[in-house]
Image (cartoon, rainbow, N blue to C red):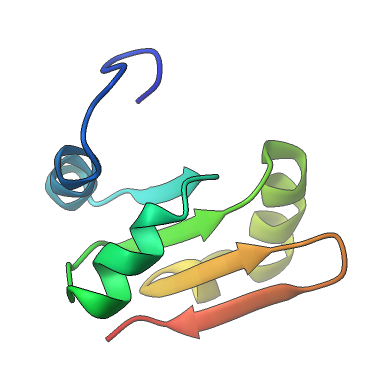
Length: 82
């Protein structure tokens, strides 16, 4: 999104993810608010850095769909979205 639609709103990014059935990879905490408090539907969200994301995708694969995933240096938390 940064390359295609710089400055896009969180809502616009979520809409595009739904339309393209894409899991979002982001460092933006606003997506957690949208998914859990506002109940915005999206195929999945991964919040963290790219190199750690690649390792997590290789290890967890399909478990990431329909989940909100937070990756830290110490742990991977996968929470099923409502």
